[in-house]
Image (cartoon, rainbow, N blue to C red; front, side):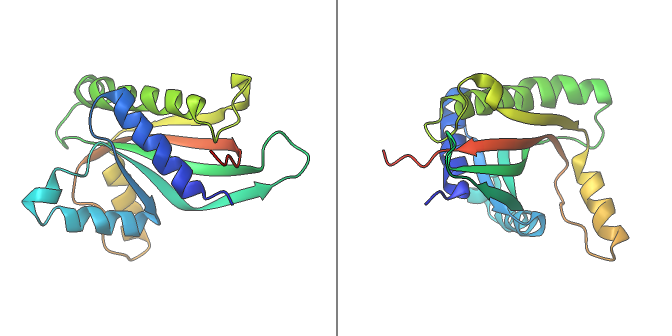
Length: 174
């Protein structure tokens, strides 16, 4: 049986190797992820084990197929997230966060997806996704929560690259 979270976890591990540094992985509802990040902020040991990270936002749609070159298609929303500074100008944000952290992690993630034995990406045109740069995403998340009468989600100042992917997954017994 294909477990999407496990496949993405493996791709994130391969991403960290390609990137040459830590890339942490979180999955679940955005509130659960925010809670985990807040909890990690409470201890010196885990405070540094948050960013950069890749968040797989749940719930996601799975379409199962027979007679295809793949076993399942999954529509996923991921965020590649890095720590930022609320006082950065847009140009500084691009220079220090996007160019130095987010884009290299993004490139490593896409290359890791293409080389995963669980992803049907041959020809490479089968790998279909949308990319959105999310400047100051903390503000957007917190404003959305407040508008719903909820507490803010994130205390950290974050920037992100959002990926909306349609992956064709293969059950590989290797």
